[in-house]
Length: 310
View 1 (cartoon, rainbow, N blue to C red):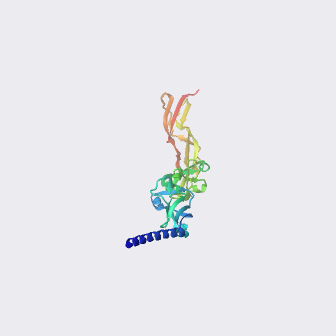
View 2: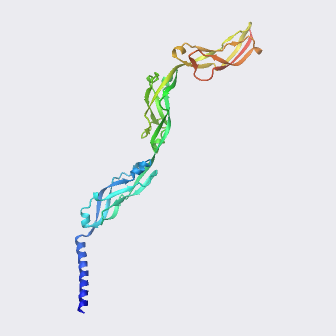
View 3: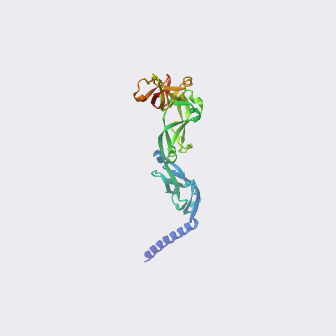
């Protein structure tokens, strides 16, 4: 009987000791809450995003978060922002706006009650590229009475790259010629710029090259009339009517030659034996050496009607 009582007393003593120990521990090291402020926020998988051709173009202006934690007094006493790791994971990159939860890693024995802010908004865009033909713009002042043609050009296309939002705005790659010094026949390196449909420069894009090596051939141009050239007009006959279409042409060539030209004649027409005293044909023009027409062919439509002299 005494043995049984002894065993009961031992068990009871142990139970009382455990209760007393727990009481002492909770009294001297109670569970508390604490807010850890300015925990640095890191972004995971940025390398994957960049490798896949995406870029982070915007996110909430948040560099750190506040974390409310719970733990024993002893665990919380020395706990600081450096002991916590707050992060967001970009995951698989896709274009558009995302809302990502903030994850916080804490030391053992610490529990998270809340995180502020608990999520972050961000935006990703694809990095794209496109090829555009170089558009050469020569000022009207320089083109006056001149025919200007490209002689040499290092490249005709340039690659534009950057965020889709900016690249999509680029309509042309423009090379502006505003100075006469560039028309001296020599090769010049001239800068180009990306512009939108309104001609405004588009910023925040990269070009495969920022200038083009180019030279020009410059010829003088001049508009002159077309004159009828004929022979063997029968006696007692005269030209009552004549039409030439077109009656003017633009010639181009070296300035010293073009300046001496006042008109371009047709090939000589023989009027000696006309049916019904009329002539109607396409007639070739007689173009002087070292001169050519700016456009069109080298023929004009000629109509001649003869009549008797009074």
